[in-house]
Image (tube, rainbow, N blue to C red; front, side):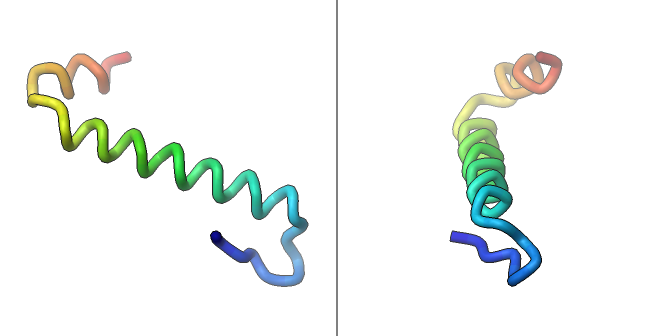
Length: 44
């Protein structure tokens, strides 16, 4: 998905992709939830 160039190893690229995917999913979940639940989730 994301390429870090010749300096980044395959493992680093995989970790970056996983991190970006997880962050994207969390962001989508926050957007999909009502504001009161969203505030509670951010506290956790």
